[in-house]
Image (spheres, helix red, strand yellow):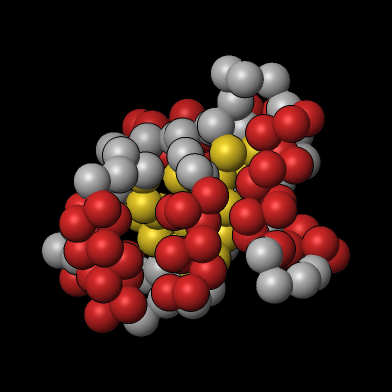
Length: 155
């Protein structure tokens, strides 16, 4: 929520989670809309190359993929982190096996529609990170109120 980012990040940490970035400036995140805007057959490769050309060398480049074909392209193009978005558990496991077989050190992050009930199942695929956005964007509000009963205190 606007103005509450620091509190939200602290709440995730206090609850046992880990924040991998504070804001958008902490890394390059290539999302599906960026890939759509680039277009073409090698859009994942081109997006990663453009990010590497323009971003400081200290920033990691993360790319969101939704298919194994995009995953393979991101792996070959040298992404630092590959976000496996809205993938079935078996597809995530296949991506992990391919990464491990290729001997690459790229981090794999599961994301998109992740529920707390699926965490163990997803962790067992071997992904390195599991992103649960619902921890912050769908957290229930705490009902805090201050009720004054002035009738009891009037003399």
